[in-house]
Amino acid sequence: MVQNPVFINGIAFKEAVLDHALKTGRNIKQNRYDKAKIGFLCEGKGCSWRVYCSVSAKYPNKWQVKIMKKDHTCVPTGNCEMLKVPQIARLFVDKIKEEPDYFMPMKIEELVMEKWKINVSRPQCQHVWTKALRWIEREYDKQFGRLRDYCAEIRSSNENSSVELDCVENDDGIEVFKRFYVCFDILRRSWKETCMPLIGVDGCFLKSRMKGQLLVALGRDADNAIYPIAWAVIKVDLGLEEGEGYVMVSDRQKGLIAAVKRALPQIEHRMCVRHIYGNLKKNHGKKPDMKLKIWNLAWSYNEADYRANLRDIEMYDQDVYDDVMKSKPEKWCRAFYKLGPYCEDVENNSTESFNNSIGKARDKPFVPMLETIARLAMVRIAKRDVICSSHEGLCTPYVIEMLESLHKKASESMVRPSTNQTYESTTSNGCAHRVSLASRTCSCRRWEITGISCEHAYGVMLSKGLEAQDYVVHWFKTPIWRRTYAEGIVPLRGAKFWPVGPEPSIIEHVIPYQPGCKKVTKTDKKRKRGVNESP
Ligand SMILES: [Zn+2]
Ligand SMILES: [Zn+2]
Image (cartoon, rainbow, N blue to C red; front, top):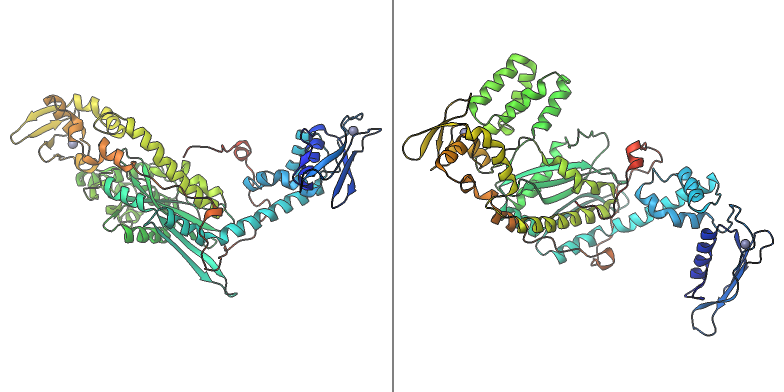
C-alpha cells in the first residue's frame, strides 16, 4: 500500500488506506483516533495486517507511517466498514452529477459490488445519492451566483462583445435570473462581413434545474453550414410544449431576433416551413400528402410554380388552404425571398447540426452550459479554419456538390443563342427558360435565389465551354469562406479567474428536483458521452 510513507496530512493517509481496502477487498477498520495519530487494522480472521501513522518529527507538518505490517493472512469477505456514506458519495459524485437518473441507489449498490466486490446496503446507497445531490446543488448555486462575473470575463477577454443579463428582484429582495444574452464581437463582425445577410433561430429547452430555453441565432457560411452569431437563455414558465426538434414559442424567438437586430440591423427573418407545417398538423392532423404539398409550395422558385402549387392545396382541402393563407406564405416560400441572401433553404436544415453541436450543451447545469456553448463555438471555428485553409478551388464544397447534382440535366439541355449574352435553355421534358449570363439570371429564378446557376444556365455554360464556378455569387467562394473562420473566440478562463464584481449574487428560479421524474430509456443507458466529443 505505501511506497512513500510520508503524507501531507492525516486525511491523505486515510485516503490511501481506503484505497488499499478497496483494491484488496479487505475489511480494514480504524482503531486509533487522535489528532496526531491514526491507526488501522484488518478485521479479517486471524489477520495481522495493521498500519499506524502520526505527525512526523522529521518532516515538519507531514505525517509519517511508523508501524506497518503489510501482509494479509485473511481472505476477502465482501465487507468493508471503512466504506461509509461520505466515502461512497465522494466516489460517485461526478457520475451522479452527469446522470443523476442513471446512477440511482440500486445502480450504485451494483457498481460497488461489481468494481470492488464489497457489499453495501440499499439504504446506505440512498443516503449516498441524496448526499451527492446536495453537494451538487450547493456547487451549482455557487456557480450560478457568479453569473455576473462570467459576463465580466467575456467582456474582458473578448472586447466589445455584447453581454446582457436581466434579473428581477423577488419578494425577499434577492435578484432572480430572467434572461441572458451574449454576442461575441468577433462572431458579429465575421458574420456581418463574410456571411450572407440571413439569420435563423434555433433552440431547445434546458435540461438543467431551471425551466428555460436556449436560443441560438445562426448565420450561414460560404459552405452553407451554420455559423453561431449569438445566443440567449430565457427563463420560461411551465406549460410550454416542445415541438419536434424545434421551439415553437415565436414571441421568445422575437426577443432574440430583436436583440440581434439591435446589433445587426437590416436582416431578413424567414420563417421555417417545418414550423408552419407543425402548426398545420396541430389543426388538421397528419393528412396524407399534406406535407408534400406544403413543401412543394415552399420550394416554388417563382410565382408561376407558387400559384400552381397553391391551387393544388386549394383543391386538396379548403381548410388547409385557408390556414396556409393565414400563415403569410410570402414569409416562407422561395418565390418571395428577397434577392440577396442567397440561401434557398425553406426549412431550418441546421436543426440537425445544431443539436449535434451547440444543443448538446443543454444537458449541463446553467453556468457550465454557457461555458460549453462558447467553447463549442470556439472549437467549431478553429476546426473549420483548418478545413477551409486546405480547401482548393474557387468555390466551397457546397457549390461543387450542387453543380455536380445539376450536371446531368444541364448537359442534356437544349441551348439556343440570342443576342446580348442571352439564351433560351430547355432541359429535357422541361419548359423553355430565358438565361442571361450578363445579368446572371434565369427566368426560373433559381439562379437569383441560390446564387449558383440553375440547370438551364449551367447548360448554357457547358455548351459555351465556360466555368460555372466563375458565375457563382461571391458569398460561396473560398476566399470569403476562409475569412469567416480566420478569427475566433478568445478562450475564456475558468471560474477561479473571473473578475469579481461588487454586485450581489443572483439566484436561479428553481423547480425542485424530483427523483425519477425522467424515465431512463434504453438509449440513455447505452449512451456514453465522450469527454472530447467534437462539436
Ligand atoms: Zn487481512
Ligand atoms: Zn433556370
